[in-house]
Image 1 (cartoon, rainbow, N blue to C red):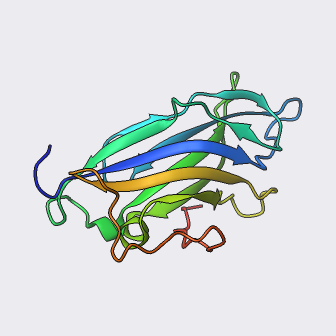
Image 2: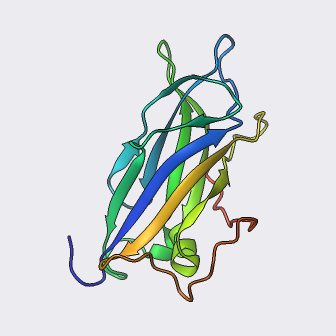
Length: 167
């Protein structure tokens, strides 16, 4: 699709920290899947193997884009959509372990412009650890510049309104 009113959602998974060890004998083999609610494409980062809990970095192949129809033409209103990042620990012998998830509402991007910050990863109830993931998320109007109502500057210390992921 294209034409007036179309926008692009651009997500870059940059870093993670505090990812707990999910297996007894090794560090996390971490990867993420990234989606926009209501849109068909689901993307996956590469697996970062044997990563210590302290900090790890994805390379330049972790940027993903979606095309978003003009407001009112999709199945869902933009205000109801979020970018959702699910963090996993890869297991070769069994199913992958879910570490947790983070979400960024598109309404927040429309109101405040691009996001480039650490986001808390929501863990299942009772699970140990307080992992975080560093994301760069933009909602770009056709024509090129990131959209923001009023151009509110992103303060590095701002507490972000995160949509809780289903547990």
